[in-house]
Length: 216
Image (cartoon, rainbow, N blue to C red; front, side, top):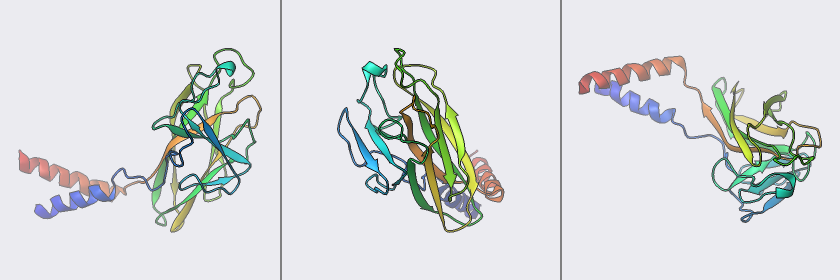
């Protein structure tokens, strides 16, 4: 019985919620009420490399009241990433990061995605937010969100699954919207986690049940 209990503890540790990717955009700091531009190949954003033309890191206190956005707030912390850059630099713009993986292991990647809708009818911030995800340079898959309120970022949770083909896997997010009427497509709190195998889950369940019986 003690051995099963130990196996449970080991299993829980192996499949904890610790993310395999550096998914925040707090470093480097851009200053309160400001934003910073990062161009192609830049590695200043911790863990990430910029692809395409450029991206922005935006502070939560930044806003454009004249365009109907009071505040571009992050999902958590102070900062988030705008995949479009200054204005809209097209669908080649984004960021990429390589993570350590195990071949044939299934993983889940999740992120919070922002849509900004103007509250005053300005020509900008009128369209859906479209984020394209590419795993290991594969085909881009689009994820679309349309905010339910205006005047600030409206965040929604997105997720996808993949099976790793080797010891390293690249995760790339692109601006998926090519029009000129939306110049904020935000992502924040990116996470990648291994999915436990069914057999492992069964062992965990048996162990937890044994612990429960022992405590009863």
